[in-house]
Length: 486
Image 1 (tube, rainbow, N blue to C red):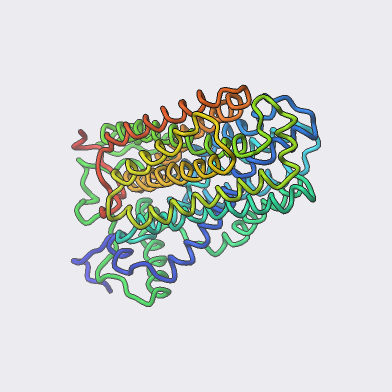
Image 2: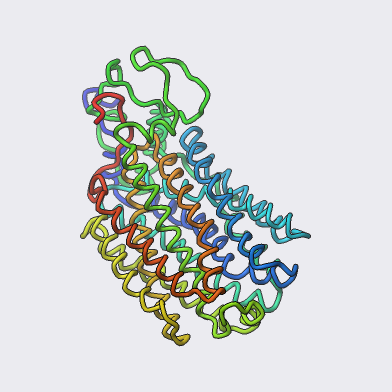
Protein backbone atom coordinates (compact mmCIF):
# COMPACT_ATOMS: atom_id res chain seq x y z
CA UNK A 1 0.00 0.00 0.00
CA UNK A 2 1.05 3.59 -0.58
CA UNK A 3 2.59 5.54 2.26
CA UNK A 4 -0.32 7.53 3.74
CA UNK A 5 2.07 10.24 4.94
CA UNK A 6 3.09 11.01 1.35
CA UNK A 7 0.63 12.43 -1.14
CA UNK A 8 0.51 13.84 -4.64
CA UNK A 9 -2.05 15.81 -6.62
CA UNK A 10 -3.29 15.24 -10.20
CA UNK A 11 -1.04 18.14 -11.22
CA UNK A 12 1.98 16.40 -9.66
CA UNK A 13 1.18 13.12 -11.39
CA UNK A 14 0.55 14.59 -14.83
CA UNK A 15 3.57 16.88 -14.73
CA UNK A 16 5.77 14.09 -13.41
CA UNK A 17 4.77 11.67 -16.16
CA UNK A 18 5.19 14.27 -18.88
CA UNK A 19 3.65 14.39 -22.34
CA UNK A 20 3.72 10.94 -23.92
CA UNK A 21 1.85 8.51 -26.15
CA UNK A 22 -1.30 8.77 -24.04
CA UNK A 23 -1.59 12.54 -24.46
CA UNK A 24 -0.67 12.20 -28.12
CA UNK A 25 -3.73 10.02 -28.72
CA UNK A 26 -5.91 12.44 -26.78
CA UNK A 27 -4.56 15.28 -28.92
CA UNK A 28 -5.61 13.50 -32.09
CA UNK A 29 -9.08 12.74 -30.72
CA UNK A 30 -9.73 16.25 -29.38
CA UNK A 31 -8.23 17.64 -32.58
CA UNK A 32 -10.69 15.66 -34.67
CA UNK A 33 -13.48 17.24 -32.63
CA UNK A 34 -12.10 20.69 -33.39
CA UNK A 35 -11.69 19.84 -37.09
CA UNK A 36 -15.40 19.05 -37.14
CA UNK A 37 -16.30 22.37 -35.50
CA UNK A 38 -14.01 24.36 -37.80
CA UNK A 39 -15.45 22.72 -40.92
CA UNK A 40 -18.98 23.57 -39.86
CA UNK A 41 -17.97 27.20 -39.29
CA UNK A 42 -16.04 27.52 -42.55
CA UNK A 43 -19.16 26.38 -44.44
CA UNK A 44 -20.60 29.80 -43.66
CA UNK A 45 -18.23 31.29 -46.24
CA UNK A 46 -19.91 29.32 -49.03
CA UNK A 47 -23.33 27.94 -48.29
CA UNK A 48 -25.20 31.22 -47.77
CA UNK A 49 -24.73 32.38 -51.34
CA UNK A 50 -25.58 28.95 -52.77
CA UNK A 51 -28.80 28.65 -50.72
CA UNK A 52 -29.74 32.21 -51.67
CA UNK A 53 -29.47 31.27 -55.33
CA UNK A 54 -31.56 28.10 -54.98
CA UNK A 55 -34.38 29.54 -52.89
CA UNK A 56 -34.28 33.17 -54.07
CA UNK A 57 -33.49 34.63 -50.66
CA UNK A 58 -33.05 38.29 -49.84
CA UNK A 59 -29.68 39.54 -48.48
CA UNK A 60 -31.25 39.70 -45.00
CA UNK A 61 -32.41 36.10 -45.23
CA UNK A 62 -28.94 35.06 -46.40
CA UNK A 63 -27.30 36.81 -43.43
CA UNK A 64 -29.76 35.06 -41.12
CA UNK A 65 -28.24 31.69 -42.11
CA UNK A 66 -25.00 32.72 -40.42
CA UNK A 67 -26.68 34.47 -37.50
CA UNK A 68 -28.83 31.48 -36.48
CA UNK A 69 -25.72 29.29 -36.28
CA UNK A 70 -24.15 31.72 -33.84
CA UNK A 71 -27.44 32.04 -31.96
CA UNK A 72 -27.44 28.28 -31.46
CA UNK A 73 -23.82 28.43 -30.36
CA UNK A 74 -24.70 31.16 -27.88
CA UNK A 75 -26.99 28.76 -26.04
CA UNK A 76 -24.81 25.72 -26.66
CA UNK A 77 -21.60 27.17 -25.21
CA UNK A 78 -23.10 27.74 -21.79
CA UNK A 79 -25.28 24.59 -21.84
CA UNK A 80 -22.47 22.18 -22.71
CA UNK A 81 -20.16 23.88 -20.22
CA UNK A 82 -22.69 23.18 -17.48
CA UNK A 83 -23.20 19.60 -18.64
CA UNK A 84 -19.48 18.82 -18.70
CA UNK A 85 -18.89 20.30 -15.23
CA UNK A 86 -21.93 18.51 -13.79
CA UNK A 87 -21.74 15.12 -15.50
CA UNK A 88 -18.21 14.88 -16.86
CA UNK A 89 -16.14 15.96 -19.85
CA UNK A 90 -16.90 12.74 -21.77
CA UNK A 91 -20.65 13.13 -21.55
CA UNK A 92 -20.24 16.73 -22.61
CA UNK A 93 -18.40 16.06 -25.86
CA UNK A 94 -20.42 12.91 -26.66
CA UNK A 95 -23.59 14.97 -26.40
CA UNK A 96 -22.34 17.85 -28.49
CA UNK A 97 -20.94 15.54 -31.18
CA UNK A 98 -24.25 13.68 -31.45
CA UNK A 99 -26.12 16.94 -32.01
CA UNK A 100 -23.65 18.14 -34.64
CA UNK A 101 -23.85 14.89 -36.59
CA UNK A 102 -27.66 14.71 -36.60
CA UNK A 103 -28.15 18.41 -37.32
CA UNK A 104 -25.57 18.36 -40.11
CA UNK A 105 -27.36 15.52 -41.89
CA UNK A 106 -30.73 17.24 -41.43
CA UNK A 107 -29.27 20.44 -42.92
CA UNK A 108 -28.18 18.63 -46.06
CA UNK A 109 -31.68 17.18 -46.51
CA UNK A 110 -33.70 20.29 -45.57
CA UNK A 111 -36.55 20.76 -48.11
CA UNK A 112 -37.27 24.40 -47.22
CA UNK A 113 -35.58 27.55 -45.96
CA UNK A 114 -37.34 27.44 -42.57
CA UNK A 115 -36.33 23.84 -41.88
CA UNK A 116 -32.82 24.65 -43.06
CA UNK A 117 -32.60 27.52 -40.57
CA UNK A 118 -33.88 25.30 -37.77
CA UNK A 119 -31.35 22.56 -38.49
CA UNK A 120 -28.48 25.07 -38.76
CA UNK A 121 -29.49 26.62 -35.43
CA UNK A 122 -29.48 23.15 -33.85
CA UNK A 123 -26.09 22.49 -35.41
CA UNK A 124 -24.79 25.72 -33.90
CA UNK A 125 -26.08 24.52 -30.53
CA UNK A 126 -23.98 21.39 -30.92
CA UNK A 127 -20.90 23.19 -32.24
CA UNK A 128 -21.05 25.41 -29.15
CA UNK A 129 -19.83 22.43 -27.13
CA UNK A 130 -16.49 22.29 -28.89
CA UNK A 131 -14.98 24.06 -25.89
CA UNK A 132 -15.35 20.83 -23.88
CA UNK A 133 -12.67 19.11 -26.00
CA UNK A 134 -10.13 21.79 -25.07
CA UNK A 135 -11.03 21.72 -21.35
CA UNK A 136 -10.72 17.92 -21.35
CA UNK A 137 -7.39 17.87 -23.19
CA UNK A 138 -5.93 20.66 -21.04
CA UNK A 139 -6.52 18.67 -17.87
CA UNK A 140 -4.17 15.92 -19.11
CA UNK A 141 -1.30 18.26 -20.04
CA UNK A 142 1.77 18.92 -17.82
CA UNK A 143 2.76 22.49 -16.95
CA UNK A 144 5.85 22.53 -19.17
CA UNK A 145 4.99 23.86 -22.63
CA UNK A 146 1.28 23.70 -21.89
CA UNK A 147 0.65 26.73 -24.08
CA UNK A 148 2.43 25.12 -27.02
CA UNK A 149 0.35 21.93 -26.74
CA UNK A 150 -2.87 23.91 -26.62
CA UNK A 151 -1.74 25.66 -29.78
CA UNK A 152 -1.11 22.24 -31.28
CA UNK A 153 -4.75 21.45 -30.56
CA UNK A 154 -5.82 24.75 -32.08
CA UNK A 155 -3.86 23.85 -35.20
CA UNK A 156 -6.44 21.13 -35.81
CA UNK A 157 -9.08 23.87 -35.97
CA UNK A 158 -7.04 25.66 -38.60
CA UNK A 159 -6.55 22.41 -40.47
CA UNK A 160 -10.30 21.93 -40.46
CA UNK A 161 -10.73 25.34 -42.09
CA UNK A 162 -8.26 24.40 -44.81
CA UNK A 163 -9.92 21.02 -45.38
CA UNK A 164 -13.35 22.61 -45.66
CA UNK A 165 -12.13 25.25 -48.10
CA UNK A 166 -10.56 22.52 -50.26
CA UNK A 167 -13.67 20.35 -49.96
CA UNK A 168 -15.88 23.26 -51.04
CA UNK A 169 -13.59 23.95 -53.99
CA UNK A 170 -14.00 20.33 -55.12
CA UNK A 171 -17.64 19.62 -54.19
CA UNK A 172 -19.60 22.85 -54.62
CA UNK A 173 -19.14 23.44 -58.37
CA UNK A 174 -19.80 19.76 -59.19
CA UNK A 175 -22.33 18.44 -56.69
CA UNK A 176 -23.76 21.46 -54.87
CA UNK A 177 -24.14 22.60 -51.29
CA UNK A 178 -26.13 19.62 -50.00
CA UNK A 179 -23.28 17.20 -50.63
CA UNK A 180 -20.87 19.65 -49.01
CA UNK A 181 -22.97 19.76 -45.84
CA UNK A 182 -23.31 15.97 -45.75
CA UNK A 183 -19.60 15.25 -46.23
CA UNK A 184 -18.69 17.88 -43.62
CA UNK A 185 -20.43 15.75 -40.98
CA UNK A 186 -17.94 12.88 -41.32
CA UNK A 187 -15.40 14.13 -38.71
CA UNK A 188 -18.11 14.50 -36.05
CA UNK A 189 -19.36 11.00 -36.88
CA UNK A 190 -15.85 9.58 -36.40
CA UNK A 191 -15.53 11.40 -33.05
CA UNK A 192 -18.81 9.87 -31.93
CA UNK A 193 -17.77 6.36 -32.97
CA UNK A 194 -14.45 6.63 -31.10
CA UNK A 195 -15.92 8.16 -27.94
CA UNK A 196 -16.16 4.77 -26.22
CA UNK A 197 -12.36 4.61 -25.98
CA UNK A 198 -11.88 7.99 -24.29
CA UNK A 199 -11.12 8.39 -20.55
CA UNK A 200 -12.67 10.88 -18.16
CA UNK A 201 -10.49 13.70 -16.86
CA UNK A 202 -8.72 12.60 -13.65
CA UNK A 203 -8.81 16.20 -12.42
CA UNK A 204 -12.57 16.28 -12.82
CA UNK A 205 -12.94 12.95 -11.02
CA UNK A 206 -10.82 14.22 -8.12
CA UNK A 207 -12.91 17.36 -7.77
CA UNK A 208 -15.99 15.12 -7.65
CA UNK A 209 -14.37 13.00 -4.94
CA UNK A 210 -13.92 9.92 -7.17
CA UNK A 211 -10.33 9.33 -6.18
CA UNK A 212 -10.19 5.63 -7.06
CA UNK A 213 -11.44 6.22 -10.61
CA UNK A 214 -8.97 9.06 -11.04
CA UNK A 215 -6.16 6.84 -9.73
CA UNK A 216 -6.97 4.11 -12.28
CA UNK A 217 -6.86 6.57 -15.18
CA UNK A 218 -3.55 8.03 -14.00
CA UNK A 219 -2.17 4.48 -13.79
CA UNK A 220 -3.20 3.92 -17.42
CA UNK A 221 -1.41 7.15 -18.38
CA UNK A 222 1.73 5.95 -16.60
CA UNK A 223 1.58 2.54 -18.27
CA UNK A 224 1.11 3.91 -21.77
CA UNK A 225 3.79 6.59 -21.27
CA UNK A 226 6.14 3.95 -19.79
CA UNK A 227 6.67 5.90 -16.58
CA UNK A 228 5.54 5.74 -12.95
CA UNK A 229 3.22 7.68 -10.69
CA UNK A 230 4.71 9.65 -7.78
CA UNK A 231 4.88 7.76 -4.47
CA UNK A 232 2.09 8.17 -1.94
CA UNK A 233 -1.67 8.60 -2.16
CA UNK A 234 -3.66 10.76 -4.56
CA UNK A 235 -5.23 13.88 -3.03
CA UNK A 236 -6.98 16.87 -4.52
CA UNK A 237 -4.79 19.48 -2.84
CA UNK A 238 -1.97 18.86 -0.37
CA UNK A 239 -2.30 22.33 1.13
CA UNK A 240 -5.97 21.91 1.98
CA UNK A 241 -7.44 19.92 4.84
CA UNK A 242 -10.43 18.33 3.19
CA UNK A 243 -12.17 17.86 6.54
CA UNK A 244 -11.85 21.51 7.46
CA UNK A 245 -15.26 23.04 8.03
CA UNK A 246 -14.31 26.70 7.97
CA UNK A 247 -12.98 26.70 4.43
CA UNK A 248 -15.22 24.43 2.37
CA UNK A 249 -14.81 23.95 -1.32
CA UNK A 250 -17.24 25.57 -3.64
CA UNK A 251 -19.85 23.03 -4.69
CA UNK A 252 -18.62 21.53 -7.90
CA UNK A 253 -22.05 20.57 -9.11
CA UNK A 254 -23.43 22.84 -11.81
CA UNK A 255 -26.99 21.63 -11.54
CA UNK A 256 -29.37 24.46 -10.56
CA UNK A 257 -31.36 22.14 -8.30
CA UNK A 258 -30.77 22.31 -4.54
CA UNK A 259 -28.27 20.03 -2.86
CA UNK A 260 -27.54 19.18 0.74
CA UNK A 261 -26.32 22.05 2.87
CA UNK A 262 -22.80 22.03 4.10
CA UNK A 263 -22.66 22.68 7.84
CA UNK A 264 -20.66 25.90 7.69
CA UNK A 265 -21.19 27.12 4.15
CA UNK A 266 -24.97 27.17 3.81
CA UNK A 267 -26.56 26.26 0.53
CA UNK A 268 -24.37 25.35 -2.41
CA UNK A 269 -23.77 27.81 -5.19
CA UNK A 270 -24.55 27.24 -8.83
CA UNK A 271 -21.80 27.38 -11.41
CA UNK A 272 -22.95 30.75 -12.66
CA UNK A 273 -22.67 32.17 -9.15
CA UNK A 274 -19.25 30.56 -8.78
CA UNK A 275 -17.77 32.39 -11.78
CA UNK A 276 -19.10 35.64 -10.30
CA UNK A 277 -17.64 35.06 -6.86
CA UNK A 278 -15.50 37.88 -5.49
CA UNK A 279 -12.34 36.10 -6.70
CA UNK A 280 -13.56 35.47 -10.24
CA UNK A 281 -16.08 38.13 -11.26
CA UNK A 282 -13.49 40.54 -12.70
CA UNK A 283 -11.90 37.74 -14.69
CA UNK A 284 -15.30 36.61 -15.96
CA UNK A 285 -16.40 40.06 -17.15
CA UNK A 286 -13.03 40.75 -18.74
CA UNK A 287 -13.10 37.46 -20.64
CA UNK A 288 -16.64 38.15 -21.81
CA UNK A 289 -15.47 41.38 -23.44
CA UNK A 290 -12.37 39.74 -24.91
CA UNK A 291 -14.31 36.84 -26.38
CA UNK A 292 -16.95 39.13 -27.85
CA UNK A 293 -14.40 41.42 -29.47
CA UNK A 294 -12.14 38.59 -30.68
CA UNK A 295 -14.98 36.56 -32.17
CA UNK A 296 -16.43 39.63 -33.87
CA UNK A 297 -13.04 40.48 -35.40
CA UNK A 298 -12.05 36.97 -36.47
CA UNK A 299 -15.31 35.87 -38.08
CA UNK A 300 -15.78 39.33 -39.53
CA UNK A 301 -12.45 38.99 -41.34
CA UNK A 302 -13.37 35.47 -42.50
CA UNK A 303 -16.58 36.82 -44.04
CA UNK A 304 -14.75 39.83 -45.48
CA UNK A 305 -12.58 37.40 -47.42
CA UNK A 306 -15.67 36.26 -49.33
CA UNK A 307 -16.80 39.85 -49.88
CA UNK A 308 -13.52 41.56 -50.79
CA UNK A 309 -11.42 38.85 -52.40
CA UNK A 310 -13.73 38.21 -55.30
CA UNK A 311 -12.89 40.10 -58.45
CA UNK A 312 -16.64 40.31 -59.07
CA UNK A 313 -17.49 41.89 -55.72
CA UNK A 314 -18.85 45.17 -56.98
CA UNK A 315 -20.54 46.69 -53.96
CA UNK A 316 -24.30 46.29 -53.96
CA UNK A 317 -24.27 43.72 -56.76
CA UNK A 318 -25.65 40.42 -55.56
CA UNK A 319 -25.77 39.00 -59.08
CA UNK A 320 -22.10 39.60 -59.66
CA UNK A 321 -21.26 38.09 -56.30
CA UNK A 322 -23.28 35.00 -57.15
CA UNK A 323 -21.32 34.65 -60.35
CA UNK A 324 -18.12 34.52 -58.35
CA UNK A 325 -19.20 31.17 -56.89
CA UNK A 326 -19.29 29.70 -60.38
CA UNK A 327 -15.57 30.11 -61.00
CA UNK A 328 -12.59 29.17 -58.88
CA UNK A 329 -11.68 32.68 -57.72
CA UNK A 330 -13.68 32.70 -54.51
CA UNK A 331 -12.68 29.16 -53.51
CA UNK A 332 -9.04 29.85 -54.31
CA UNK A 333 -8.91 32.99 -52.17
CA UNK A 334 -10.71 31.38 -49.23
CA UNK A 335 -8.45 28.32 -49.50
CA UNK A 336 -5.28 30.47 -49.52
CA UNK A 337 -6.33 32.61 -46.57
CA UNK A 338 -7.30 29.48 -44.60
CA UNK A 339 -3.58 28.80 -44.20
CA UNK A 340 -3.30 32.09 -42.30
CA UNK A 341 -4.51 30.36 -39.15
CA UNK A 342 -1.83 27.68 -39.38
CA UNK A 343 0.90 30.26 -40.00
CA UNK A 344 -0.17 32.35 -37.03
CA UNK A 345 -0.49 29.39 -34.71
CA UNK A 346 2.98 28.14 -35.64
CA UNK A 347 4.51 31.47 -34.63
CA UNK A 348 2.36 31.74 -31.50
CA UNK A 349 3.28 28.25 -30.32
CA UNK A 350 6.95 29.22 -30.43
CA UNK A 351 6.63 32.47 -28.49
CA UNK A 352 3.64 32.04 -26.15
CA UNK A 353 5.54 30.23 -23.38
CA UNK A 354 8.59 32.46 -23.80
CA UNK A 355 6.90 35.87 -23.93
CA UNK A 356 3.88 35.00 -21.82
CA UNK A 357 0.17 35.27 -22.62
CA UNK A 358 -0.21 39.03 -22.21
CA UNK A 359 2.66 40.21 -24.38
CA UNK A 360 1.90 37.69 -27.13
CA UNK A 361 -1.70 38.93 -27.40
CA UNK A 362 -0.58 42.56 -27.57
CA UNK A 363 1.97 41.89 -30.31
CA UNK A 364 -0.48 40.05 -32.57
CA UNK A 365 -3.29 42.55 -32.04
CA UNK A 366 -0.98 45.38 -33.03
CA UNK A 367 0.10 43.48 -36.13
CA UNK A 368 -3.50 42.73 -37.06
CA UNK A 369 -4.45 46.39 -36.69
CA UNK A 370 -1.60 47.48 -38.96
CA UNK A 371 -2.38 44.93 -41.69
CA UNK A 372 -6.12 45.59 -41.74
CA UNK A 373 -5.83 49.37 -41.88
CA UNK A 374 -4.90 49.68 -45.62
CA UNK A 375 -8.22 48.04 -46.54
CA UNK A 376 -10.08 51.25 -45.71
CA UNK A 377 -9.57 51.90 -49.42
CA UNK A 378 -9.93 49.52 -52.36
CA UNK A 379 -6.95 47.50 -53.58
CA UNK A 380 -6.44 44.96 -56.32
CA UNK A 381 -7.25 41.32 -55.68
CA UNK A 382 -3.69 40.24 -54.87
CA UNK A 383 -3.09 43.03 -52.36
CA UNK A 384 -6.51 42.48 -50.76
CA UNK A 385 -5.92 38.76 -50.34
CA UNK A 386 -2.44 39.36 -48.88
CA UNK A 387 -3.69 41.92 -46.36
CA UNK A 388 -6.62 39.71 -45.35
CA UNK A 389 -4.22 36.77 -44.96
CA UNK A 390 -1.98 38.75 -42.62
CA UNK A 391 -4.78 40.28 -40.56
CA UNK A 392 -6.56 36.93 -40.20
CA UNK A 393 -3.29 35.29 -39.13
CA UNK A 394 -2.70 37.93 -36.47
CA UNK A 395 -6.23 38.10 -35.07
CA UNK A 396 -6.51 34.30 -34.96
CA UNK A 397 -3.21 34.08 -33.08
CA UNK A 398 -4.29 36.65 -30.49
CA UNK A 399 -7.68 34.96 -30.15
CA UNK A 400 -6.01 31.58 -29.59
CA UNK A 401 -3.83 32.94 -26.79
CA UNK A 402 -6.93 34.39 -25.13
CA UNK A 403 -8.56 30.96 -25.40
CA UNK A 404 -5.53 29.35 -23.75
CA UNK A 405 -5.53 31.97 -21.01
CA UNK A 406 -9.22 31.50 -20.22
CA UNK A 407 -8.75 27.76 -19.72
CA UNK A 408 -5.81 28.33 -17.39
CA UNK A 409 -7.30 31.07 -15.22
CA UNK A 410 -10.41 29.17 -14.08
CA UNK A 411 -10.26 26.30 -11.55
CA UNK A 412 -11.24 22.79 -12.67
CA UNK A 413 -14.52 22.91 -10.72
CA UNK A 414 -15.88 25.68 -12.99
CA UNK A 415 -13.47 25.65 -15.94
CA UNK A 416 -15.94 24.48 -18.58
CA UNK A 417 -18.70 26.72 -17.25
CA UNK A 418 -16.48 29.81 -17.12
CA UNK A 419 -15.07 29.24 -20.59
CA UNK A 420 -18.51 28.26 -21.87
CA UNK A 421 -20.11 31.49 -20.67
CA UNK A 422 -17.33 33.57 -22.22
CA UNK A 423 -17.60 31.65 -25.49
CA UNK A 424 -21.36 32.18 -25.46
CA UNK A 425 -20.89 35.94 -25.15
CA UNK A 426 -18.37 35.71 -27.97
CA UNK A 427 -21.02 34.16 -30.19
CA UNK A 428 -23.05 37.35 -29.88
CA UNK A 429 -20.20 38.96 -31.78
CA UNK A 430 -20.59 36.20 -34.35
CA UNK A 431 -24.30 36.99 -34.70
CA UNK A 432 -23.62 40.67 -35.30
CA UNK A 433 -20.55 40.48 -37.56
CA UNK A 434 -22.38 39.21 -40.70
CA UNK A 435 -24.42 42.40 -40.73
CA UNK A 436 -21.16 44.36 -40.84
CA UNK A 437 -19.02 42.19 -43.09
CA UNK A 438 -21.78 41.50 -45.59
CA UNK A 439 -24.19 44.42 -45.20
CA UNK A 440 -21.78 47.36 -45.08
CA UNK A 441 -19.47 46.10 -47.82
CA UNK A 442 -22.29 45.33 -50.22
CA UNK A 443 -23.78 48.75 -49.52
CA UNK A 444 -20.50 50.40 -50.57
CA UNK A 445 -19.37 51.17 -47.00
CA UNK A 446 -16.10 49.24 -46.98
CA UNK A 447 -14.25 52.02 -45.16
CA UNK A 448 -16.83 52.11 -42.36
CA UNK A 449 -16.69 48.31 -42.00
CA UNK A 450 -12.90 48.25 -41.75
CA UNK A 451 -12.80 51.13 -39.26
CA UNK A 452 -15.33 49.34 -37.09
CA UNK A 453 -13.19 46.19 -37.07
CA UNK A 454 -10.15 48.30 -36.20
CA UNK A 455 -12.01 49.86 -33.28
CA UNK A 456 -12.91 46.41 -31.96
CA UNK A 457 -9.27 45.30 -32.20
CA UNK A 458 -8.24 48.38 -30.22
CA UNK A 459 -10.87 47.51 -27.58
CA UNK A 460 -9.45 43.99 -27.35
CA UNK A 461 -5.93 45.34 -26.87
CA UNK A 462 -7.12 47.73 -24.19
CA UNK A 463 -8.78 44.92 -22.24
CA UNK A 464 -5.59 42.84 -22.24
CA UNK A 465 -4.02 45.53 -20.04
CA UNK A 466 -6.30 44.36 -17.24
CA UNK A 467 -5.47 40.65 -17.34
CA UNK A 468 -5.55 39.72 -13.61
CA UNK A 469 -2.43 37.55 -13.74
CA UNK A 470 0.07 35.86 -16.03
CA UNK A 471 -0.61 32.13 -16.26
CA UNK A 472 2.44 31.10 -18.27
CA UNK A 473 4.41 28.45 -16.35
CA UNK A 474 1.84 28.28 -13.56
CA UNK A 475 -0.01 25.14 -12.45
CA UNK A 476 -3.75 24.77 -12.93
CA UNK A 477 -6.00 25.23 -9.92
CA UNK A 478 -8.72 22.70 -9.18
CA UNK A 479 -10.99 24.45 -6.71
CA UNK A 480 -11.62 27.82 -5.15
CA UNK A 481 -12.73 28.46 -1.62
CA UNK A 482 -15.44 30.60 -0.07
CA UNK A 483 -13.09 32.04 2.49
CA UNK A 484 -10.42 34.63 2.16
CA UNK A 485 -12.08 36.12 -0.90
CA UNK A 486 -10.89 39.45 -2.12
